[in-house]
Length: 311
Length: 311
Image (cartoon, rainbow over all chains, first blue to last red; front, side):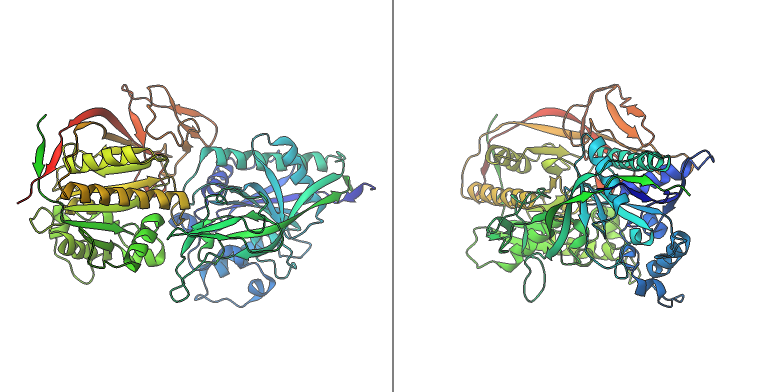
């Protein structure tokens, strides 16, 4: 494959607190805001606390999930004083960091998240052919010794892409777990700090002309979500994730494998026909969304060498 | 030591959802409520969802922490329609299960809790000489193969005892971790189910005349709480629990041991003069209470043989 020339990554946004109780990102953003740019940085970085009201209350959101408010429809909907806070805030963030899909948008948006699931570090994106995101993923995989790094792809068109990272020309959620919500664990905080620093290092090297060799990256493409078993009348859940599956994010799940253990002791099995990779297993914030876990298909994607295209 | 004769444990309360987002207890109570007493139980058990509004919202509490509302003062304070919901609810629960300190109170109150800390199973009480609670603890220690069981003692007079379990003649919080709040983990749910069942078994055997041999139980008496390092102006925390201490609940902490790792990378050490046992390390709900961990002194307590005193 021929090296692909790509524009400089000049403007980067690092966002945290998009969910106010995902504390590694919240504290990382606070640390970064303390050490304001001194003008000597090789890249222009804007650091943003995305949902300050939710951060203040240490809740995921105040009125509605901010990280579902970045579809084209929501961003262009009329808002008034009575609109949900997060809907207003998404339009503010779009004005600051976007507008989404425009030439004015930041070149790269990295949005920091935590999960109660044992995911390690995931870069979650809407593209399986964004060479910048894939190269950053490869760089993190190479450099991070103690944290597994994976690339997760939600196959959704940009107009329908609902999360903050879709506002940048390139973008991803940097999702790290396991960490309970409303708690910060030092090891998770440090992994996030390292992930952000490695991303910055890659950007600086790329901008200064380094050629990054191509190669292969495993891409996990989301296929479907699975809900908890629920009581048909009350919709209350009747089983927890099975102990054999809990914490086994990205370990292949085969048809017939235990999936749930009901509160009365019955094992419920995976009934799909295809072995798939589970992730976001027992994520705390997804009970209300009807998601016990997500399932992905894995494939190897070949990525070209990349080089900055200096004009 | 001579065997101590004690009254029958006739009326037992099992409570969950005192904190609405501690889900093992919530689901255990729901399961128990599904299988209502069929009149053949050897002991009268009342099962209570303590804070149904908080359970509904999956939050710790709605207006104020219910499990701080059972002091004599709060229970006897005048309430009106504008009083915090939990203050009203604490008086309802006191009427149902107490009144605290009276002959009408349930004989034993077991209140189910979860923590994000790696505590295993703790029975948390206000007494280091409650032979019933200590014998139940000994029974659980003997019978539970895969869960460490410990007895934690808060040295507070009954009038000032603030938690629901203080309403019973005997009582304890059964606290199990680690589990993120708003999440139920199957292994934690099963441990709680086993703990409650073993407690019931012990009570039935005791009531039917079994003599339980005395012996020794390790008692962890709470000495003090330690807060996170905080910014002196904003009171925002500036460090997380050190990786060497995280998840090491009930492992002796020595003077000079690492305690916190600041977000800028500095290690802060335990400055106390006495080696003590840390617990509730990095409990999510205690950030707002200014508690990063609690410290306890351990000692062995000799307990007498006990026997039911049948009248």
